[in-house]
Image 1 (cartoon, rainbow, N blue to C red):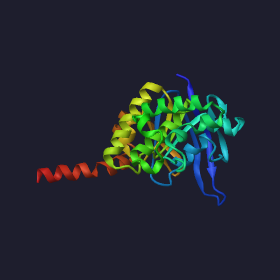
Image 2: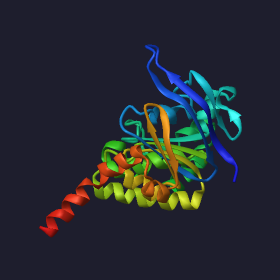
Image 3: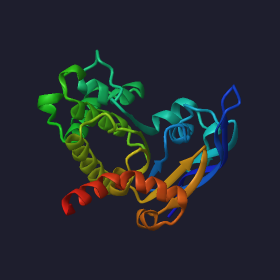
Image 4: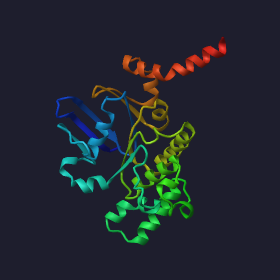
Length: 255
């Protein structure tokens, strides 16, 4: 399997000298999903944003499909990479249909092409275009807005999809529905996905591999099964934080 994204000895330091990424080297295979875990401030979102150059690395390099992002036209780079963020980032004064087709509009596609693609993508993410295409973001629920955000990220058929805590603001049931939708989409579309999340369950459900960051460094890079069985102290601490509720519930039942 070919490498879709490669981080080569990547560094990023703020102007104040704070080191957020500290020599990260990773190669992500095409068509796979990688979950980036870590506590707040570990460098997860910073690492994600180096791929589409929303953050410019101060050392090392990022390659997409074998080419340095520094040697790629910035507009072309970003249009070729899907980007999904928390709260979807939709334009409030545009309809759902136009929000989904914005990249295609920027690329000069005809209105007929944009409408056809937008409606097809709305169906793909579980929204009936006859019902939702003419609505505005404020007329949607949080889960519906996030579905539109996913559709927009897929509009230009990118090979790479970056997702930064995309479901973090949703209630548990809606979040589970979105995760099921994404798992189905990823299985069918074979995108290379980088998913930043705090949620271990989400990472285990969606990812082919899990990367744990701490203080800008890679602590673990493991398949989900190996992550769950790891004896590394940092991994054990992360697992323990998510198992506390299960332990308390079990203790309560046995009391």
